[in-house]
Length: 297
Image 1 (cartoon, rainbow, N blue to C red):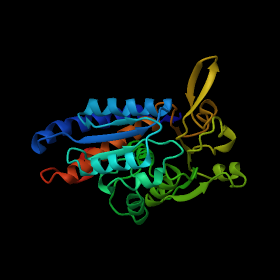
Image 2 (tube, rainbow, N blue to C red):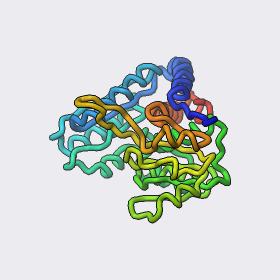
Image 3 (spheres, helix red, strand yellow):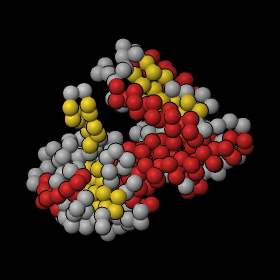
């Protein structure tokens, strides 16, 4: 029987653990951890994601210092706001919600965030620490995938893994984390040839392309682990939509040994890791608190 990798339930467990620890640690530190989420523009999907993150912060006891800025906000204004957040001792994590409007240089702003407050793990310094196998804040979505595998006793060591997508947000850090876990890793992308042959050879398939129905049962070898990072909004009737992943879930679940649903798989884990990273930064910044991230789980 195919195992469902339930990220929603695991994320709730992580949030409960974090909430308990924050209650105890805030008394020692004299303040709760703080997260600042900066959103530029009025992208409806981004607005929904930000609301979800802010509600999650409220549930676990993280103070929110978010700023929702208009689409015509200048690069200089956002950079100044990030500098203020870097200097604010109440704030332990900073996240720039992506995407940003075309006139904004997202990479420059991501690198303007203090690395030790980089809650999304996308600063060049944190990506470099990942590459070198050093301690640092990890990119939330791939970090969430690794926690999901660990919670279900799925060890990537010695397994063949393929990551579909090479973005700096998911694909590249996902490949590095699987490599760090001793998997043999292939990255596939838009120029890759014979995708089906590549995926059929993999024990672990991670898809982060953003194309509904990209992977069918024919792409997956029996007994493989399938991680669907894709989140695609498709219209089912005029004005009605539903979320689907990159994977044909019904068909692939008949072949795979384990699979993540969409929604309810990787998405909730991304938010849980954002909270984790914020609390990890909080612990490292407050001398009286434990800095060992293993204490958070």
